[in-house]
Image (tube, rainbow, N blue to C red; front, side, top):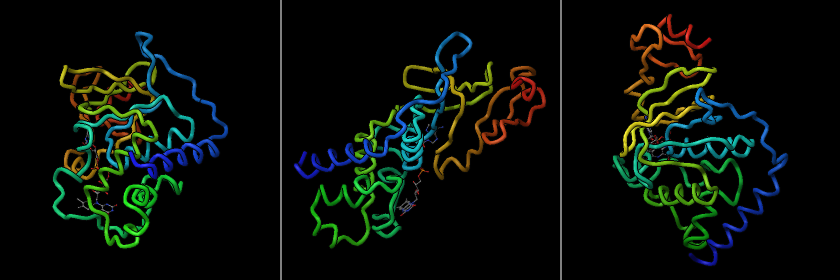
Length: 224
Ligand SMILES: Cc1cc2nc3c(=O)[nH]c(=O)nc-3n(C[C@H](O)[C@H](O)[C@H](O)COP(=O)(O)OP(=O)(O)OC[C@H]3O[C@@H](n4cnc5c(N)ncnc54)[C@H](O)[C@@H]3O)c2cc1C
């Protein structure tokens, strides 16, 4: 790693330490039915929105979180997969998931990686570099991301929790969480909300994230 990048990473740590107050967790951890600890928030999708969400939560001292993405590490979002344009559409000065912390901006990373002159001469950010920046962002913030994990179903569980069914290469796992936050990207618009099965009448229904209501009247009882 170049000395400029090492210096930038040190700067990020200094900046974050200065704004860490009150630096204490404030949510009471919840336990699942089998006394397994539940997450405070499960974030679905580790594209730029999922990473920004995770960072925002951690800055607010909500640290008992997990971000799941079905793709392999570095292949999240459109950048190295289905994108056809070679660059981002937004002007290079637009800030992204950095939440307005200067040392975390794309510009800071680009200047540390290629120099200030290269940044000045840059027109639009290439999608490959944006993908690389997002990986750096994730690493420097130590965001809790797990790849190769597809959330295939979310249902209400006992104790007001949610049970997310997660498909991995090793099989299906259940992740319990108090809240879920969907950052599944544009492609997921076509698939709509997660499907679930009513715990009472076993009918299929759509799990709606905002209201926690469902299309099944029985499932509303299951939430009580
Ligand atoms: C060439 C190009 C240029 C663009 N330029 C810009 C730009 O300049 N500015 C801008 O704002 N936008 C731009 N966009 C749009 C860009 O796609 C979105 O802004 C951005 O990707 C949205 O981020 P996201 O995290 O919401 O979704 P995505 O980046 O699509 O990430 C969603 C993630 O969720 C994961 N996922 C989905 N379903 C599940 C599931 N069930 N379980 C687990 N993981 C799941 C996916 O694998 C994916 O990694 C551009 C797009 C392209 C293709």
